Image (tube, rainbow, N blue to C red; front, side, top):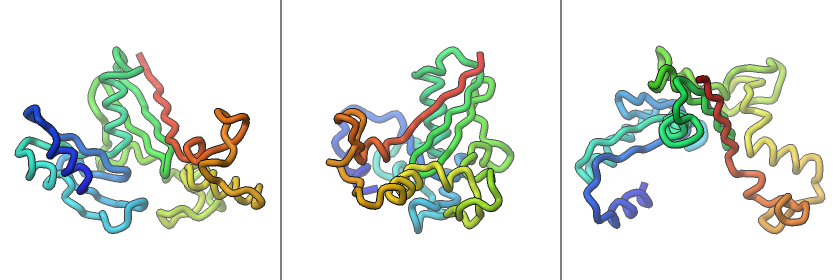
Length: 185
């Protein structure tokens, strides 16, 4: 959060608002992080409060996939679409819905938490405590673990294999998020 405060300190133009996204379940109405598997110690954090303090402008907080869906709908490939599903695959898997031109979070704010849908009850353990979640075998860290298991003689480094580097892979090739938007006109 210090990095964000430092960035806000450099802004010379007046701010109208601040938007913050978080990779996990968020209560957008309260600006509260509900659960954080990937950033320990951030559960029940009132994330909206600290950006409102410094600049004195309204702040909005939402899940990263919901924020990505809204951005894609407003400025990206989703322009002109009535509804879309935005899927992000990175450290976790998330989905953000835009339904009839509005963000859709579901009754409990968890509509886009698709990474914890169980696809194989006997599958690998997930960080949420369940077994066989979609997220367990197909996120960036899981793919890296799988790659290390198949080729224990190779280390995954920035100097390792990459398709943009003569068939060699690099960390960015393994860890950059993959984003997919499905638009419905």
